[in-house]
Length: 119
Image 1 (cartoon, helix red, strand yellow):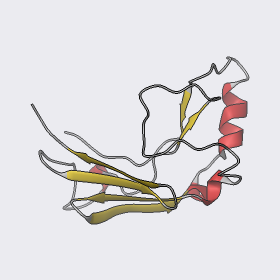
Image 2 (spheres, one colour):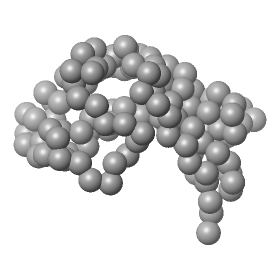
Image 3 (cartoon, one colour):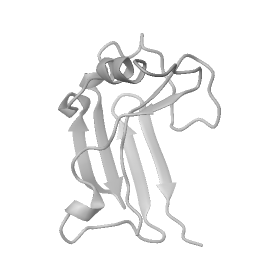
């Protein structure tokens, strides 16, 4: 089984490799990350739509918590978790299948599109 997930990923500092999305932006471009809106579509059908202010903890709180016991090095990715609307919890829609097209959009910054291919 395979599922999709739209998620905010915070990259520490500025070194980056194997870029994850359509854009990497600085904190100056996103002064309030909780206001970001995500939309996930599977084959053009909206499956998730949420604002980051639905998060239990802010990005700042997550980073503060993580750095209490470890150093976040340049290039560290901090994944914030998913929102409601993922496959196992949707009646009739469920998991993605071979050749499904998954699009994850961060409003104002672009969308990442991937076709699911099972070998």
